Amino acid sequence: MAPRIVLCTLNARYIHASLGLRCLLANLDRHGGAGLRAQAVLREYTVARPTHELLADLLHLLGDEPQGPGQTSQVLGLGVYIWNVVATTELLRLVKLARPQLRVVLGGPEVSHETDGQAIVALADHVITGWGEVSFACLCRDLLQGGQPQPKIMAGVQPELAQLELPYGEYTGADLAHRLLYVEASRGCPFHCAFCLSALDKTAWAFDLTQVLAALEVLYQRGARHFKFVDRTFNLRRDNALRILQFFLDKQASGAPGQPVSLHFEVVPDRLDQRLREHLAQFAPGVLQLEMGVQSFNPQVQRNISRRQDDEATAFNMRWLLAHSHAHLHADLVFGLPGESLQSFAEGFDRLLAIGPQEIQLGILKRLRGAPMTRHDQTHGTVYASQPPYQVTQTALIDAASMQRFVRFARYWDLLANSGRFVLTLSLLLATGDPATVPQAVVAGGGPDAATGARAGSAFWRFMDFSDWLWQQLGSTHQLTPERLVDALFGYLCQVLPLQTVRQALLADYVSSGARASPQALRGWLPRMTDGTGTVASTLKARQHRHSR
Image 1 (cartoon, helix red, strand yellow):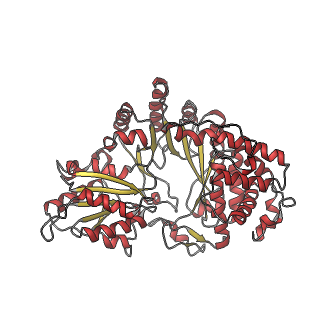
Image 2 (image 1 turned 45 degrees about the vertical axis):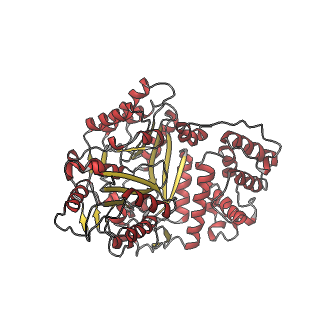
Image 3 (image 1 turned 60 degrees about the vertical axis):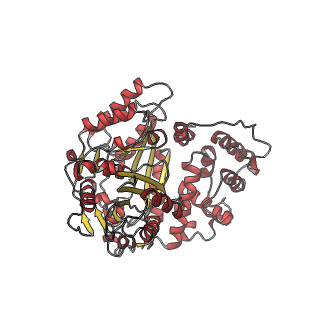
């Protein structure tokens, strides 16, 4: 029998599982009426899958077209985000052509603000903005039972968290075995960083922690081992954070060998007191990944975006964790913020690199619908792309050419530094690059900054030199295999360093990375490789392991 409600979204990757849709499923009976959940199914796809395949699968799931003009017998709910809105719009257009009587309900951050003029909104029957657990269930009940007509744009009801059913029973055995499980102990954020949608929240709301821990216990007993907390500020309430950490420390102490837990938290880096640091320090290697939003070390930029941040406390806590814990630190910087120049960003990058987090995630400012950032657009000359993901293309301080230059820098940094594949070679690369010795080709077209004294001793500018050179050599930022990167690094570094020094570093990095091809620069130097396979858990930890060398 065909379902009457289909909840669907297009995830960025298969390993991601939609927490939002599972929240909607879990609350259908409580807020829509008994039996509604039994009539609903979940379908998750990836944005990379061809649209015609998604359409065919959905039509097969929905079954035959219902008979009778105007009859509403099925509802399709679509989760819409900045990364999937283009593909979802295309899918919805085809679905509506094939099933004109199907009632389509949209939700998600991309359609919760500025709905006028959005193509996907025009195609839909209803849009729920904001929180959806209560409103979606009520709307489905009304649509399927022939209730009163509802408006197209509906503001989602935000209930007390105690009125919501937790969604974790909606994770399947396949989810537990193969995917990251997204969980939350709180919603919202009390901070007001202008580039973030959470700036619209007045505060953060905490779920009943006893219930959350009980649900996590059930997941753990079912075999779940990979947990990613989506809380915007995990350590905002210290006592709650300590209880959650202790829960997993107890699991670590009693866990079966070969079944390690992996945990992912987003923390406010300047709000880690001694007790929290000491709890974090007790986790074994490979367990903890901490996302630490730094965004900018420029005090004026911080003021421009209404960000309160103690830079000294941030640096202290990161250094303490690096020295005393096994936590894998991902520190975020955002390029293109109002008032940030290329040089001031370079100084912040160098400062963060000197602290030493395992990964520095380089984001480009995006215009999120509804975020307060737009109040700075005219003052700071901020221009965004008109198509998702609405990335900034230039500002008053950063021209379009420099913006593209940084986009390439960020991509190459992820491939070389964040991947952990080139630990030794990267240290050579960042220690070279004196303007007096770098080949002139690397700074061609680099702009006025290429000759300034600020470059001396800067790892940022050294990597920018390499990025410019690599772009000139390859003309691409994608489909770059480790082998192509090895050969490129060899060609670049041998211009300023002894060949044997470069080859030894590249050889050690390549072998340690587990790559199994044969780059030209290392022909005749590679040891004999043996085949091997990895588990899901080992795959998730491989990137962290490479950084530990």
